[in-house]
Length: 300
Ligand SMILES: *[C@@H]1O[C@H](CO)[C@@H](O)[C@H](O)[C@H]1NC(C)=O
Ligand SMILES: *[C@@H]1O[C@H](CO)[C@@H](O)[C@H](O)[C@H]1NC(C)=O
Ligand SMILES: CC(=O)N[C@H]1CO[C@H](CO)[C@@H](O)[C@@H]1O
Image 1 (tube, rainbow, N blue to C red):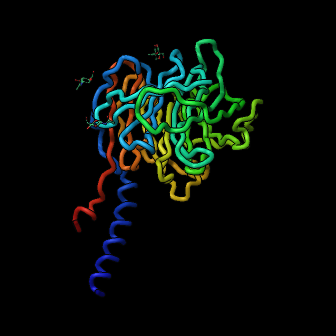
Image 2: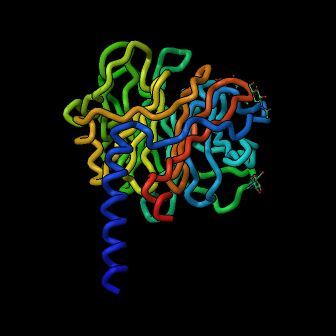
Image 3: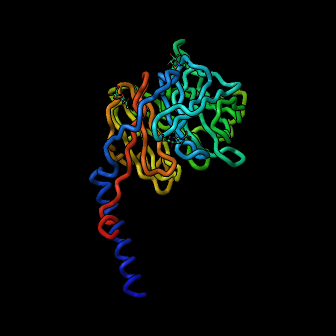
């Protein structure tokens, strides 16, 4: 028993050390693999991506402005369209991102960020929440709730939802540093807009010379955060789930296959890979899988 236990202990220590050095070398994830191309013409401006919790292997996406209030369910193994959901009592002014997180009364909800600047120069500054449907067939989804906010920023393109249902919105800036805001929970369902002060925000440790960032996602276990810029994917490991404090640390840059107009990124439901999808017709869905630490290969 004793030598076996010791062996196990050594293995654990080794794999911990490996994980740390692997992270420093920024070789945590593999290069992009093309999963498949969109075969449907209805998704031609995909601007957000999120993994279903209720239906593993399904990713939700949506069009940018110009579409109805529609969520498209894609098969993560071949990028085919599985179902289309229409959200009643919502409008797609300029939906910029989508996320999945808990509902108020348990279960999983889809969150939609309508906070881009539409063709009319206005921003709806609204988050919609709907329950994840039980079946993957075309259907109408009732609104679970909405959150109307206001801020001093022009627009956001990144929506993050954590395990507690807290909602974070990242501003999109041209030059300088974007800010991550946490939206107040009490604002859900309030007919009046709630003003979000900059005291509820933190600067990202990133400088941009493009309109960035364009998307992001928190992993289902809450420990990993991705922010996507036009040309880069940034990663923070956040074991304590303090996403605000994580922003005082520089991120690790992860592999990214440059897309024409890539605005969408999400984790897989297991957190073992992430996906990116570009705007445009017949865009390619890419996946980037987590590398298995060397120590596991050696021992296993
Ligand atoms: C997917 O699209 C890319 C770029 O248009 C193309 O090169 C590739 O052949 C397509 N793959 C499939 C399986 O159709
Ligand atoms: C997704 O695609 C895979 C491979 O093509 C297939 O086996 C699976 O049944 C599909 N899932 C759904 C929900 O359509
Ligand atoms: C099917 C559909 O409505 N597609 C829309 C997706 O969004 C773009 C605008 O960004 C529209 O041009 C498409 O018509």
